[in-house]
Image (cartoon, rainbow, N blue to C red; front, side):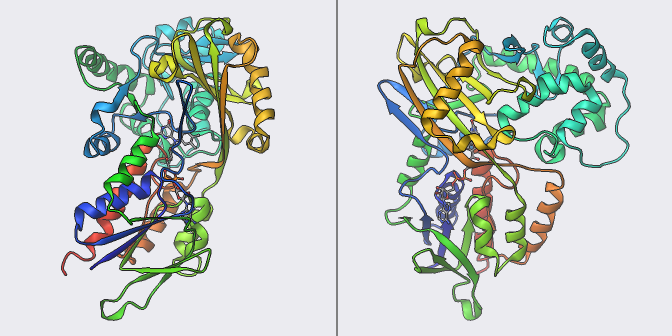
Length: 474
Ligand SMILES: Cc1cc2nc3c(=O)[nH]c(=O)nc-3n(C[C@H](O)[C@H](O)[C@H](O)COP(=O)(O)OP(=O)(O)OC[C@H]3O[C@@H](n4cnc5c(N)ncnc54)[C@H](O)[C@@H]3O)c2cc1C
């Protein structure tokens, strides 16, 4: 019987294991997991009627892989759309929150009037942003950082006050270093094709309006969805769908060696921290890059080098449950972002129970506040009490919160966010060339082509497809 070994029982490893079972149902699949639970980063805590998501909040629906996995696991009817009312995002400026200009999408506006009237920009900043309509396109294919690109197209003010905080809120990274081509390639394409981002975005606005009308007239999903039972349920359902004995907990992989493999024997041997070993015909590594590099130092140095080249930033999620009267101001929105120039430790926050009302009982508002990231990685070293105190000190003037929260949950992710810095695509291409010579090895996870949940699922599934291909002729 063919034997596959998967390392890591986060969503990438679980998606890989499920796909292996689909493609090669008579095989045996073993998954090594260092901790005592599945899900990795995904972690939902339910208490006193609150649903605290400790990391991942929801996932996008405009790529299919997250929705498809839910369908495969029978979870489609547990999907929850974002609350259609109050979709606004706010941006902090001089200690107050202002609405993001309507239609601003990550790096560019789709509507001009909200840009003209926004209090977030000065008249000069608005004028400079408007000049984007007339700027020429870049003549070569060089990779730029998101900061360079946004400043070149829209000016320093739009970058500092709008683009930088939006980007930090998602990637917790440093926009001066993050590669545009690796992270938001569609904006390079827009510039190439239409020259001006504003023109390109306004052109697509019609299509977006049409899509919105369709959504309002009954399309199934909003741009983001989550699971009624919390996102841990996704990992738990994957685990339930695997045959008993597939998951081996408390197994920390420390070395992966290629075996001589002649005569159809196993091709890979993995050694664990306790000296235990397991051999397999094919190996899938679904570990975070901070862990995976050391495994391949002696067998596939290109893989070790790639993993070691990925910087990680840390962040913490502080969830706060307030009684209704404790939040002094009314915000009709999903969340807010805070520019680095505002100098606080908060990167972003979401009005979690506005977005998904099932997450808090009536009479309460659940906030999720992100702190740290590239701008203050040391914050993950604070104790939970220190973090709570710091966040409460900053939310009071910003949101008008009063007193202690009725409940709180804190989770720290010291190396939770891989960063695709400039040159990432070149490093990825070199890794791809090296892996072509390794048909019985595949790597997946969030270090490659996207950090979001659907992308991780997709890399896991592709990894399974790659390693099963090498046995197709047998
Ligand atoms: C705070 C935060 C918020 C996020 N929010 C969102 C969001 O809203 N939407 C979204 O789409 N994405 C979000 N993400 C990103 C997304 O959740 C992750 O990229 C994704 O879950 C990573 O899954 P993974 O399986 O690749 O890795 P992980 O979840 O890290 O899983 C790896 C597994 O490997 C195990 N492991 C580690 N070392 C070893 C070893 N040596 N041997 C054996 N096992 C080992 C770990 O214990 C873990 O279980 C967020 C991430 C963070 C940190």
